Image 1 (cartoon, rainbow, N blue to C red):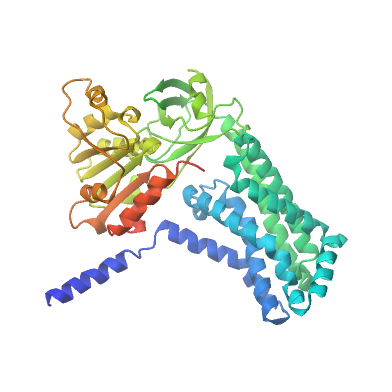
Image 2 (cartoon, rainbow, N blue to C red; image 1 turned 90 degrees about the vertical axis):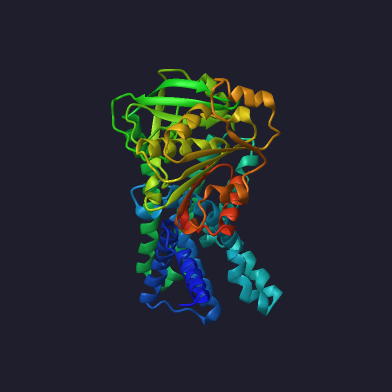
Length: 476
């Protein structure tokens, strides 16, 4: 075989390799299949539409309404259900699809009346006024107005001058009401129910599932969590803006988790309180004695961590997250990329890799604004000395001052650190991957959204497929 043929064969194999079906791809296919079920049911009942336009609009409306109901399990933290167990994927889809659904339902009345508009503006105006004033359409009108308001509140929640817990309560109750009104609307005047009354059973089944899911998440599950409290054993500030919170099971209960996962913490004193915050677990895999979290001051709650006290009760909902070392079990090497508070899951992964005496090349690129914000440096230096093939790369956004470096070397006898100024870029990442091993490398990524977006582009340019990249969000 000629050299050119060998090169072409390797190129084809690489391209095929990048098309590997990941868990996220499988979840997307499963989600799309789920949305089509009511449509298939309608077709099996022999649903008849008047014209091509009505057929297309009817099919889109059917799928959109199904997607609206599926928004509830997407945000329901259903880790026991494979389709919704990837919380990062589920929450991202919930947010994005919520905006698309809001836009579709906003223009839905206009789409229904579009044929009238094509005939004459007078017909359109008369039909539009009739739609607004018809008593049988009142539930749909209220649901339409509420949907518009609540979607806008979700999109701009960071700009609202209300507490997150207040917004979340409004979000839950509001969409519960919208769901009720929308179900009444589609089962009383919807074309599918009018064609075949049995089809309304599909809508009511989806409605009951959505409401029961709300009842479970906010009434039943908190009761179970309250029976298994944790207690704070330590709360220490470990950088200019980071804290380490350590808790232990108050009832000696087992809390099984994988390195790289996270949990929602509630320190309000009641498991029913909506003040819950997701934080990455920094402890090594299945440390049953304690759970450790590295938390950055980024908002109202995290800026008040100093008010927590040893012995205080903490309620834990978790673990969640699909990021684990099982994803890189066959990889020839591992690169961990952390930005800011994203160091927490990477520390957990590193501790587990050290515990396993993993001999593969392992690299950590740890980026932060400055050296004063770096955490766990002493431990990372120790791991670099004790692990078989681990190297640490620090990247600082600001200019590196000598006094800051001296503070890092406070022990006096530590080996030189590789500290570079700037941002995580393609050369940094490329240097962490053994030459010719791109297709067999695993990358773990956690940090601010802007950094993750830029880093993902660098990884793509380096030939790292999405199936080789495992990440965790810092916000939900």
